[in-house]
Length: 301
Image (cartoon, rainbow, N blue to C red; front, top):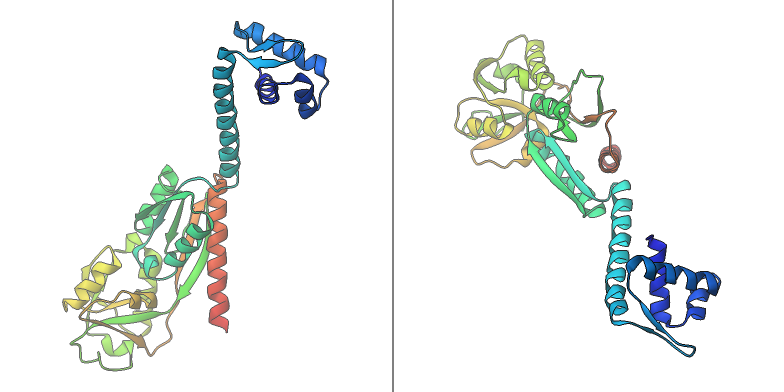
């Protein structure tokens, strides 16, 4: 039995007339009658009561009609689901991100993507840059938002945001009321940083910036997440140099001040497995590019 037999049967069952069913199917009547007889032979029961004047469904035919319609409906649904998946409109996308990305560009990207493709399920994982690289290689996430540089030819990478650095100070700090602070004036302060192996790019930028001011920062505490670093600043453990987007993390007891000296730009990049892409990943990268380009255009106005 083939699917066309089900379609032939449904047409005859709905028309209850072989001539009209043949016209509907755009075929001659004799081949249609022959196909229905073959179907009945394969099934082992009669589908229609035929007379010279009428065609009627048998009891078995009425039951078979209900099931045949259900089968074709499921097939159409399967075809449409497959088409959606091939267009990247259906499925799951696992996303890794450094904590600081959630205070800058990531919410806009996720909002825009969910608006475009609400049927794609997103699984979000807050991870350090080195964790994301391991998870990407292991297939546990599909894309990541990391702090470059990334040295891996198997991964595709695109920088989507570059932001200046600011200093996070305890609210009771003598410089907290100033509009801007010279980094050189902070040379004797206690600094809070994250371990270099977790995000060497940003770590090295901060160290190099301090060394340009002719001092090496006295690191009294390390923390993995930006939120923890800011909390330690609020507890007056020390000060921290952070990307400017951390200002969006409103934490009681912390103020953010612009540095008077020019600072390097802290970058966020999207990264993915270059040779193992998928329609969903491709659609997500398109959404990332749209948001990143819109941000660049806004900055240049």
